[in-house]
Image 1 (cartoon, helix red, strand yellow):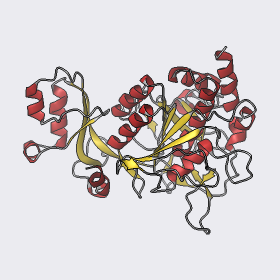
Image 2 (image 1 turned 45 degrees about the horizontal axis):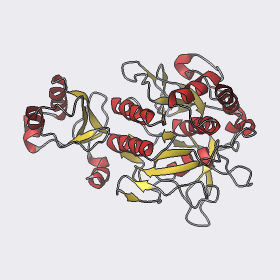
Image 3 (image 1 turned 90 degrees about the vertical axis):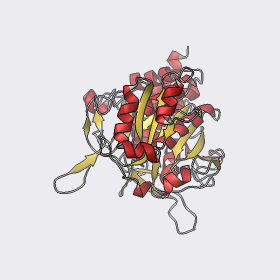
Image 4 (image 1 turned 120 degrees about the horizontal axis):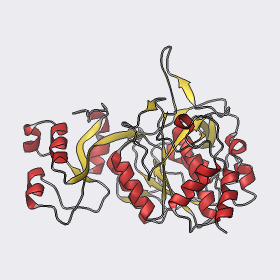
Length: 394
């Protein structure tokens, strides 16, 4: 079913919910009490047996479709009071853009990660999950850092890539340091667990994102990086809670629409570490879309911290000698793994830290560069975070 869903992502605008976002024609739900669910409720909405996922999938039957729209069905389910959430299985996209004229890895100087490496470059025991398009396992700058991957689309062991996005993210986290190649990760000593959830156009679904977060937590990841849209979804909060209960911090990109997001539309979820993007001048990253419109890092009270995300330089997928092995790019997609790398360094100092302790260390050590509504607690500082981690480990 997942294969069919992804193959049809470009054709699934059958009904649009309040946010006017494309979806798969399915609903995602979680019951408040699965043990005491009445048979009448199961029969009324044609619910299936639970799979143990963060979100169960309901694909409306022909009979349900004839009764009304998908939104009406969603509202009917919510009115019962039996569900934690009922949401559309939305289509999500990679949160990144190409860039040019990058100063090679300027972000290390800005966040003092090069100085943090005097304390730790990251522990081999710390696993960072990358829920993305796969990570090139044999890339010259990632060899030995990438674990056997898994495709949640085909449901099998798989280390192939569908786009270069995941490899770029993986390089920002764990590309080798000091080998005179093109990249250097913030936490080069950690290992990457690549979990593939996107197709060749960089699209995925909310169901796959939350399944990936659960799988990453179950497989022992300490940090889980998601560089896609969808951070505003309540399902992401539930997945983040599951990860936190397993000892993993969920780091999520803030999105690139350049909007000031309200509390109502983008809640400040306690189990989702939201990361916005800055440029080399320590200002919110923005770009011009046209004469009268612009984009850039989303902002608002939901932002926890910001990290460099403009004109970053990292690893690129290559299969031929002529293919560039490194490239530059911009977006909150790439700010998130910079913050993820800092979190991995903190875990490397003390793997017994809880996700809340790691989040607190990153927040408390961040450089205050502007108002909280735009920059959250500030821009991450790897050196200050590692030092604070050592202090709090005593």
